[in-house]
Length: 344
Image (cartoon, rainbow, N blue to C red; front, side):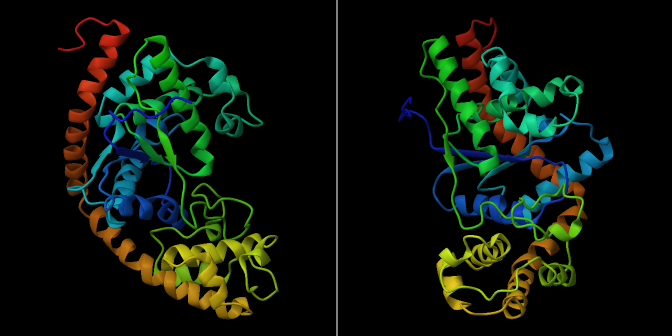
């Protein structure tokens, strides 16, 4: 494996697609961690990836609303636009320009092997899917490498796409005999990086699940949050004294992980605290904690959504800062490839 060059400035990039409402899973698996990264002395760039969203049909008015809602969720979760760069992808044309260059570096076979493409076209005629859906991972590589990002916080479901980003970077560097793009490293950490459905502990909590009871939305009020947790699927057994006892109990394990992530405690400490307790005791405590942590976020999101012009201003300023970083990287990429006028 190619080693990371010390010449690259440590930089984190990550993006969220505006294809639906934000959930507790998005908060614990992404937004909360994104905010914490601001305290680690590394540059952070966060993006609403609206270009990815249109790989499948989106209602234009709904896309605009959801783009602002994702931005509001970033801000309400602690992303400070003075400390991080926050913008929506389509305002920086370099994403599309670099994606085309990467389309010419990546191989078609690589794209067909992506499990997300297979999942999204399962049972359908894949030839009727958009070309953008197939080339999605190449655009994701451009999102990351346009800023020479050295690290990307990813869930397990995106790990394959990051591996492809590394492959594209390595192939570009090899083809053009340059050590130009970093071999980006994944950041996978935390007790609840993969929050599961409240109805089925074997499935990821998803904004696309047809059952609203399967997830906690960041827009849910306190009563709705408490009700969903009370009705979450569990088994009749008391909580064990160790994490090993949760091995074949996915719903119980999920709730313990959620409690741990919300409280900032380890899952081991949580299971020790509630050892022997029935869910009738545990669920109210979890509901109380969830409301305590999420209610301020919901209120702040609502405040931002009542002022869309302020959201647009923040995204616009972030895009200008993003372009300032991206421009010399894209210009040098074009020069390496052999395009004329790339410095102009």
